[in-house]
Image 1 (cartoon, rainbow, N blue to C red):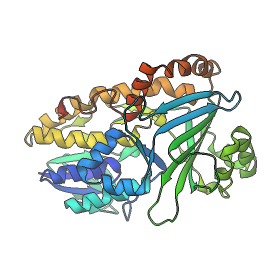
Image 2: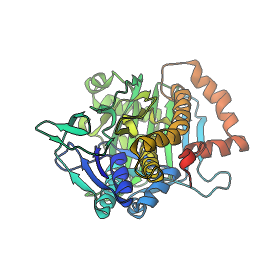
Image 3: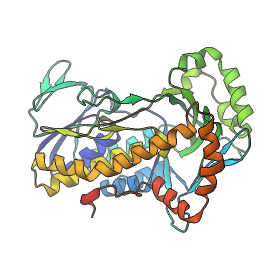
Image 4: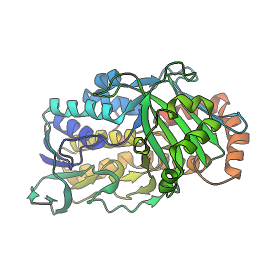
Length: 390
């Protein structure tokens, strides 16, 4: 089949590689002059690593990224722990792969090229007319299948997502010598729920030297200009007062442009396909990053799409239905849990953090609940590929 993929992000490149490995002719159109990643650090969970392994991209990703075995957070006013989830507890030897988006992008980009995917940069998709893609200057097609992987700003997807009240500032800095923080853990600190600071050790970044870390700072979605106007000195002082161990990280931020504002939304297409068009990743569903599943969801969508098309023997309409069915409950289940968790860690509520600290955290330390939380974070609390599992 002749397949067009709009967007060379994580989901688009993964889908392109999987479909090309199945024997299809795949062309990826991306708006950047040279396809490039956007964003900072993320965690590829075990379900996402399974997809990378199938695509042949896992060895490269492992070479760039950094294994983490635990997520730990504490409340800055009381000093009490409020989050403690181990990947290998109790007794399951798994881990998350902390990695910068640039590194994950490179691993997927190399896999796509090795598979024979044709990538056309500098081609901004503006819409479609039937089975043709529209660009600023011309149109391409017709194709037998169009895959929309253009993300949150998709010009093709009909989804209308609900913006969330809080986002986060992201930046990347060197891993400082002498820090007390471990390299194999995601560490976070909270002041109630209206402040969240975090450090994610992401390993190496293409084109840069040394071991690197992503830092983040929770911020109301509309407060970015206020943050800039307040000045870096006041921000650094506040951050260090909340969490002294954050000092050697935040002190490396000397220009506001080193930090990027990320805004989040919740939304889901009830039917992630139309005639001849299938939506994956953020073009199909969006949620807060609280459970660390964003990139993994896109990778799973790509895998499910390729499997559905193979199982349907090229019947696009049937494959679209099977793809949607396979991903429905995993996506909806994790979005529901994200809705429940997010206000406890990012929001203005005064009583939800109390519930989190005094009831939910103690409950999370009970052994059966620990196992549930481990599987929740690993991404397989619900079957990721539904009936397409094999």
